[in-house]
Length: 633
Image 1 (cartoon, rainbow, N blue to C red):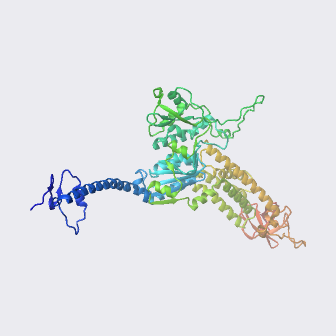
Image 2: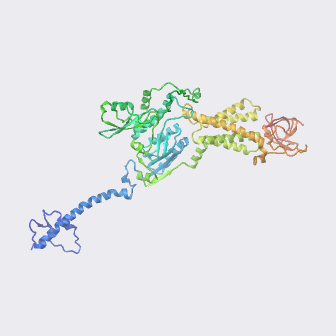
Image 3: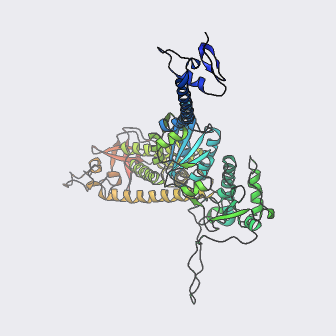
């Protein structure tokens, strides 16, 4: 006998009822545990039991449906939040264009020079070999050389990965800002600051025409970076050029924000823009005060006789056309017209015409220059969704080259070279001073060469100068053309080791002045030290032991020790006199030693060569050298 399905019901498989007016009953039936239980059909129940089951079924169905409706969205939310809670650096939370499993951090610290460029080239190649998918340039610099900066921009665009990010930690002024703009995006530490990228010269203020020409390649680069990385073109130009005024405005309909100059502001708003920034200017003179004319002293015109600078005014429109001609990408900046009036709202004035733009983190983010604030390596790692973060700092050898190419250190090396060279020439045979002079010269030339600062002509001039000086001392006696020419070649070559740029540029002129000051100061200091050495050699604790303190003939005259001066550099009074006879103890080529009454004396031949054992006679007794000639006994 088949059980009664009841009104409106029917029996499904295994006696389970399917009822069109009670949806969800099959779901509840399926959710009930079946293991070890006997399933009763709905139609087999009668009377109060059946009504109770009906009510219980309805309540159970409603409760189960409510539980499912609550639990299902919760399960979805839990799945969505899980990566950010348990794994903040999960790749699913990072945009694909930024995602990188291995991130390499390359630091750029201190002044940017050719050493910085060479170091970055090495570290970029090393990071790529190690599988870095993204490179972070951690920048902390006051600026640096323009030529080195432009080469670093080329390195970023051609050899570095596309996913290259600048991390300003904590400052990136001048060249540092230009490098940061060339990266795909910029992140900053909480107290960061960057901007102020105009070219400067230590020789004095640049004339307007010269400044415009020096700014042109920098403006070309920053505009190119702005178009590549979606910055506002006018905003980045305010980092480089004084005289740019900008106001920040917002579209009332779309919310788009752009920066406009004074002319665009007039088109959009129909009146003059407000000046909301206090100008940087000297205080106004009081009534009755006499005006004092401002006189600007410049050294730069001295260079113009070698590399004339065009002082003709530069047409701003022509300069704009030249910069635009150099661009690879077209401008995406909207063109504003009078038809846009009433659609924009002024937010603030950004920069006035008497200063360069410098921004802090909040401003950088609001202006679209910086993506976010990152305080440490862990946040940086999470920003990329990375599993590994590698650091590549300057090597010890690069730090050493950077130290040795410091102008002060180079000046000290010139001082050591000159002092040791002159002592060795005055007292041949000691060796230690000659070796020290050679080492100082090799370091002085080698460090700039490794840094890419030295050029072949500088080394040729230094070597030619040394050869001419040696010829004057040993081959062509007397202080004549060879000696003067050698000294000039040596001076120009030493100064040239400081110069790495074109003398027509502010950088090259500044380096030349630094080289001249350092070299002349070193030569003056060397002269003072040599004079003191000749006077106080006996009292010096170490050098005094190298001095021959007994004068020739002192024992025969009943005198004690001499004055303790270096025989070749000592007092004008000497034991030897004109006409004294001796024998060459060594070959005189032309310098060497001769023996007078059994005692060796450093001498110099007035002829080109005297063989060992040849009788000699004193023909000249000077302050620094004793000259002899060949004679017959």
